[in-house]
Image 1 (cartoon, rainbow over the protein chains, first blue to last red):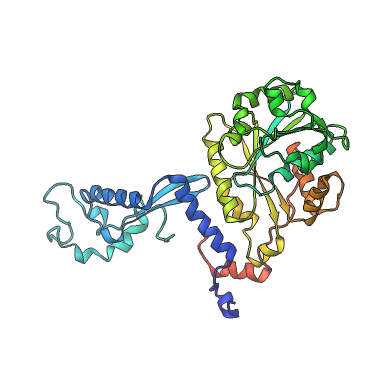
Image 2 (cartoon, rainbow over the protein chains, first blue to last red):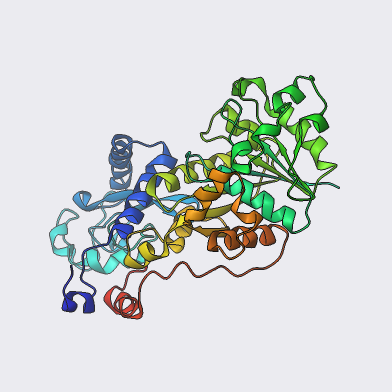
Length: 130
Length: 270
């Protein structure tokens, strides 16, 4: 039983109906997609390989999931970039304009990840995990 | 006359498909519609006992399909109402005795004489369900607020949607316990609708009288006008005839206090 303050703050154990709802949503996604978790993972690593040819991404943070809205299933991807998209220049000698540092020095750009996230067109879901 | 052919299905067995078919048929007949219900569950017929017509069966659906009798001879008239008929399933045959094309031919014959043809589909997604779906103009999916029933309903809706012929579907949620929903221990109507995302035709509260009326072979909707379940079936029948009838309020999830904490407590709308 949640305490009075927990309830005021909206902190409480989910009740059994809420648990049922969340479990159903998850099971229906896989029922309808015919895609096993292993296949999904395989696809994710292939997608990462393709994106890495064009952008620097934080590979460990890439998150791919299937999500149901109405009667359609969507594939939603969170792919954090290591820098602002405008920092990129096309061509093999690409150098970030503001620093002149070599392209490998991405560590200093990590804080940009948070800034860029909402602007990315691929990021339909926001960053709410399932 | 050009009847509407409505197939009632659920995927999962035991959600109250046959009882709902009987009560919708009775309710529609009481609204002066000429109604026939067809039991498509060949080998496991039940609509006859629920309606209390089991002793009056001479021929059945398979006899009609195989030409042993005329359609009229196989139809059992319910004497309690002026215009209610049952076309019983065969009990000694299996589902492969009838094909989807047979069902279309049969339904087309029935269309001429009735306002509404209700087809009670067998559980499952196999042959019997395909037979029941083949002639449908509309599909009513019945479910319970339980994970297993909702999951199977989703599967059925997916199959109906994937069919070449587009058939509108609507949802009936059966065996609702308002008190459990209020406690947060039963999926609410809103929850089920959000998950299944098809139009809601009606909600039926749990009612002991349903079992009692099945025991007696006299569907609840014949009388018992004050029973909440009978009222819910009557409302569904009125909606089928095109009337706008508001939904009963079985769906209050929580009291005011809990609703306030829900509004203030969480920002994500799921």
